[in-house]
Image (cartoon, rainbow, N blue to C red; front, side, top):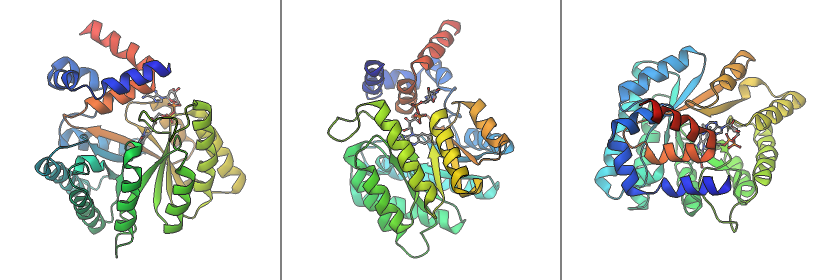
Length: 308
Ligand code: FDA
């Protein structure tokens, strides 16, 4: 299982396979299980339909690790259009952004400037930008950038971050972010990390998830618990009940195409759910990380391959 996970994470960085998959009709068809489509119009259509099912959305214009400033500005342009589209159509949605897509590995100042502009644009509509968390080499710089933007006048409500339960450092990071009043999406973590920085055993990642979810639920800030794990969800629900924490004080978050049954059940039971909806032509690394998370997805994809 761990081998399969590492294999898919390694493949997610394979440029040749990526080139082939993103350009082939078969690849696009297979990815449609997890990806809303290729264009802003596709994303808006899916967002509207998810909203009609009673769930909020966060939109992700797929892309990461750009290697020049022009590509970072192009990616930022898509997000500015998205923020306009969300406001124009009154969608219940915010956006999720990766700093490496905004040029973090080209020039940190470039990525910070773009993230700042996006937060200002979001604030002008009372909307919100979630900065996704990438691998552990970028944790500190991501936290630093989010804290600086959050501290600027008028932007406290416009930016939030993601913390991963597999990292040893997360407890301390959460304490610091909570002291600033920063909104957190809490997930287990999707990258391959060495044992020096992350719990190698899934049981420890899960235990840390439950432990720190409680800290988030107890805080006065509105957070998102991003998981499809029924045990994590049950633990959060039980803790909220025990402490008298209202259902609208936090939200569960799940990925588009994953555990739709669970998403519906939560809505039926009066919880808030936000669906992470990715779209765009650069879907390959995201798609491969989803396969890494669940080997059964590979069977699903294989069956579709046989049919196509
Ligand atoms: P876990 O992996 O233990 O799975 C529990 C159960 O959930 C599985 O048994 C299966 O039933 C179901 N499941 C999980 N993944 C599935 C899949 N891909 N397909 C089908 N079923 C699946 N990571 C990160 O490093 N940085 C980030 O910014 C984000 N952002 C983010 C946003 C949102 C809204 C979500 C839901 C997740 C992320 N993640 C992320 C990914 C996260 O770190 C993690 O890899 C996945 O959510 C899988 O972990 P689970 O908590 O679902 O549990």
